[in-house]
Image (cartoon, rainbow, N blue to C red; front, side, top):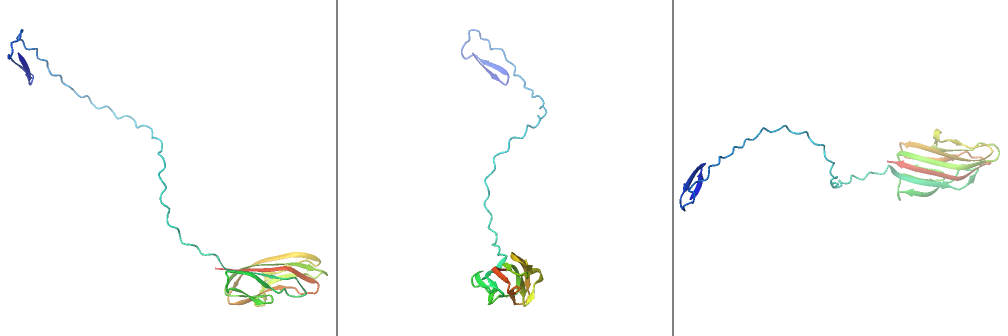
Length: 194
C-alpha cells in the first residue's frame, strides 16, 4: 500500500498488499507565529580614526617677487689730513647701473628716488678741534647726518640716513677740514629702494 499526503488529506493506494493494510496516522502541520520586534539597541562607541589619506598634488608656484633694492654702490676714501676725502668707487650692483654714479672728488650723482645711506670714518684730532662728518645734497647738509668726534684722540664715527631725491642731485661726503684733523677708513654705502 502507498499512502500520499495531498493537502493534509492522506490517500492510500493498495498497489502492493500490506500485511497490515493500515495507513499511518495523519500528523497535523504546525503553525509558526512571529513575535514583535524588540527595541533598537544603543549605538556603539565610535571606532578609531582611520589612517590619513595620501597628500594631494602641490599647487602651482606663485609669481616671483621683485627685490626691494634697485641699485647699490660702495665707496671708500684713503686717509686724508686737512682736506676732504676723495671717494673711490669700490663696487656697485647691478653691473652697469646708472642710479648711483661717481661724480669725482667726494661727490656721487643720484637719480630721482629714495635712498638708504651708511657712512663713516675713523677721525683723529690732535689739538682740541672737534671733527665732524656729514652728508650733503646739492651743497645742503642733511642735518640728521652730522656726527661729531672728540677734541683730543680718535673716534669711530658712523651714520645712517634715509633720503628722498626729488630731482637728479649731487650727494657729497663732508668733513670738517683743519690741519690737526685726520680722516681714515672712510666709507659711503648708498642703496636705492624700488
